[in-house]
Image (cartoon, rainbow, N blue to C red):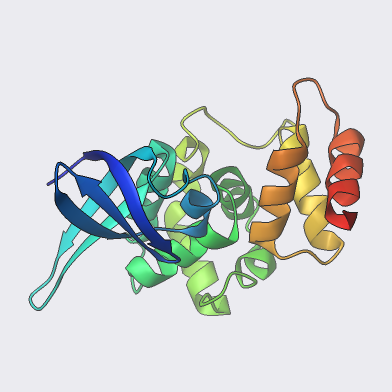
Length: 196
């Protein structure tokens, strides 16, 4: 129904935020990937939205990036998966990382996302593999060798292997990445920042 919402952030407490649009407050649920980049309270924000109506409830979900909204919708097309797990996916890993996991049939990594068991992860792989390359909008996420296609994604994987939670690894790598950085530089900068 509503595709885009532009207003002032008046409240944010994960997973909920309230945006004032011309005097009307809209309460939205959002993934942590959106919360990491939200402006401060009192600042303007523009969100992509997803409106869901059920027999007994109405829900509004907000995303800073269209690619996140698209993944949220695609994940819910998998049998047995609803908004709660779709939000957990976006709160646990980046869109590119999720696409990599699905394309490489990495069920073990998918089960590390809260709320996703082995059977759900297997269904995700089967039902989403053909669409995984389109999640980020830019084609395949994997390189010719079947590995991650960019230094930031590789850094996220390395940080996770060092024991950081998926969402934290994504945030650390994103904040540490500058144009032209290789994987080693991103990881080094992320770890140095974590020690401060």
